Image (cartoon, rainbow, N blue to C red; front, top):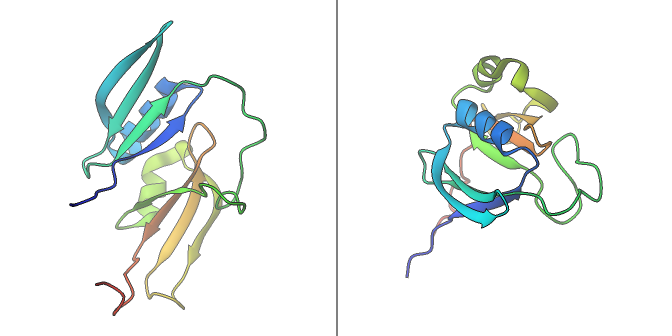
Length: 141
């Protein structure tokens, strides 16, 4: 039986801003909305690679500040990553929406041409934008 990755669930304070950001910069579009009552909705956003965000409205306040740099270093979700052909071109195309928290950094000592930058989305989630990553030979089955 085949198993495929389906979605990443997020809770956001400002759905319109979140949706606009990911639509403009990463190609996400609404795939489904489900009413939760009291004017609240659950929204599925999908990009062209069949990757979904399942976006919930908040039910409580955030208990601690969002992380900086490349995300939190305690157990849990550290950041969301997207691969692009050119990190610098992507940052330039994002304009003021590219709020960089770390980098760009080069990892040529590990993989020639591997370059990464981390930035915040409108909710403060850390996003990695990377170019040039390659799998290690001999590890795939």
